Each structure stands twice: as C-alpha cells, then as structure tokens.
Figure 1: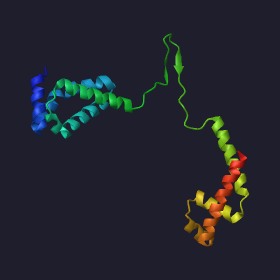
Figure 2: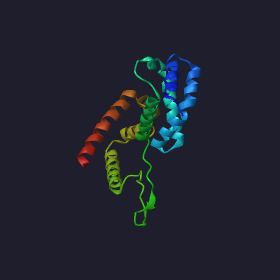
Figure 3: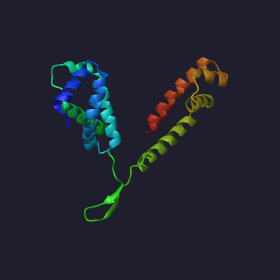
Figure 4: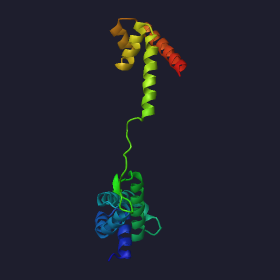
Amino acid sequence: MIQAQEVEALLARVAMGDRPAFKALYDLTAGLLLATATRVLNDRALAEDVVQDVFAGLWHQAADLRAPTLRNLGWLCVVTRNRAIDHARKRPADVSLQGQTDDGQDYTHDAPSDSPDVFAQLVMAQDHQCLQACLQRLAPEPRQAILLSYMEGLTHLELAQRMQRPLGTIKAWTRRSLMALKQCMAAAT
C-alpha cells in the first residue's frame, strides 16, 4: 500500500534535485501510474511510454514542485491520466475491417483507397489532354524549354547551356510560354 505522506516527502526531495528520492518515487508509484495509463490506452507499450514521459517531465520541472500547492499521489495519477488521454487523441483510431453484427451476420468494411475516384481520374485525364493541346500550340524551342524545365527540373542557366541559347532568350521563352499556357488552359475550362 502506497502511503500518501511518503509520496509527498519524496516529491519534496525530488523538487530539490535528489536523484535517490526520484528513483524511490519511481519504484513506489510506477506500477500504479502504469495501471492508470493502461486503463486509458488499452496498450501496455503505449502506457509505458506515457509513464516515462510523466517521470521525465517530473524531473525536468522539479523546481516547479516547490510551489506551495499540494503535490501528492492523486496529483501524479491525474497527470498520468491526462497525458494518456492526450496520447490517445493523437493516435489514429483502429477500425476493424471485419466483424459480426449483433444478430451474428458477418460484415466487412471497405478500406478507403488512396487513389483518386473515377470522377477525379476523368478530370485529370481531361486536364492532361488540354495541357497537351496547349503545349502543341507553342513554338518548338519554347515548348522544349518548358518541358525540360518542368520534366527534368533544369534551371534557366542549365536550359541556356543545354539549348545553346542566351540566358535572356530562355527566360523570355519560359515566361511567355507559361503565360500562353495559362491563357489556353483558362479558355479550355
């Protein structure tokens, strides 16, 4: 049985930076705090992490324990419980994909797909076709500059070197070509 006076005395010593008192406090209360966190999280490994966080915070904020407010076992349990609740809120909810209804019928949930739905795929295909048509309206060299810039990630200087054109020409081509593409795409929608 944990004595409240013993916990209060150990907390007072921890506030003064007493390492042996900190170890004694851990040995005395860790089991209860672990049970508190496990009750909230239903996962012992996560609960152990929470208890470790509580004790790490307790040691790093030991100077704050000198305040005249009452720090005791109940306070440690509340801190642990609140930290476990915060931890539970941060993790995604586990949803079973299979199960049984109350009347014994088996069911399976469909997991959401990361790929776009049919309508999004159709819009992307239309946008792609429109972009291809707009690119074809550009003169060959400016079109090549745009494609190299966006497909290979070349800078203006790298484009000028590869295409053997002056830097100013490359900059003018890309600027004018982007404006023309923007107008063409806006007209198509």
